[in-house]
Length: 339
Image 1 (cartoon, helix red, strand yellow):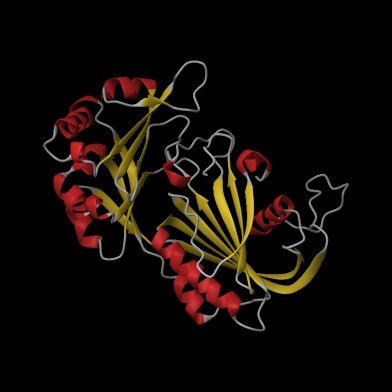
Image 2 (cartoon, helix red, strand yellow; image 1 turned 135 degrees about the vertical axis):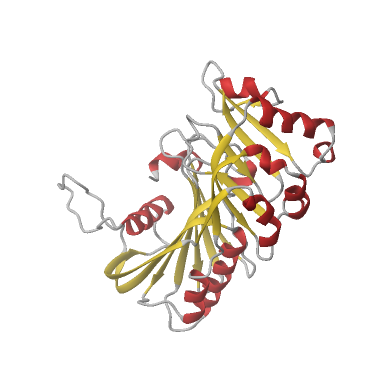
């Protein structure tokens, strides 16, 4: 998985007392690795098991996202985030609604022509443009309900393209009431993020400060995927081994949370991990890996996202006892590297 992302792999080591997470805008999973730990402390366990719930709306007419009440009570306040569900960015029409009020439609050529609204060819097109991106700032004054651009898009989605999609929707704390009118007109179900916990024993671990960053990131991915590091060079299935130098940890805790995850919850987890690693007599580092949806129309910094081989867009934050951290950022070849 690392080799496919090498085009935009970045590595940084910094010292800071105020670490901000580099959020992939559409987060599907966050994974935590705690060396020399067999069970999470209560305060950390509470955060891991209390991520915000989200909704799955069946066959949502996309024009519903332009509803005046929904805009005024949710979108304008930055209270919601949504993403089309089980759509493939390289084949299907995909939709994303960002907390900053940007609505992005990634459309095939026929759908784009039927919609009849301003857009631009995908930057990941081939010789002939077969995919187009429509990006609209719903908070802009030109898109206010009743204005010409707003009415054009609303009419196009209602009468011309009539785009429907299964849609994941989440709201920031306190924003639940703002989406209830929308939900009342749809077929929906509520879900909580799935939490998986594994206790690993006799885990060989490379030294993060002396190990090559790409090799360490590959090891971390192998641990998360449950791939053994105890292989021989002649093995047919896998020749992967733990990078040198390494030490053996008697146990380690691997926890993942999966769903439509909000930046607010990831930031809370980050703060708790910082408090955890600062405690004496514990492991000198912890890691947090945040993965974006492979088929999201946008990735870091609201740039266009493509799939190519695997749709990679993730980052790993290594936090150390002395307040330093390492940031590993990996994007696929169909992505724009953030500055």
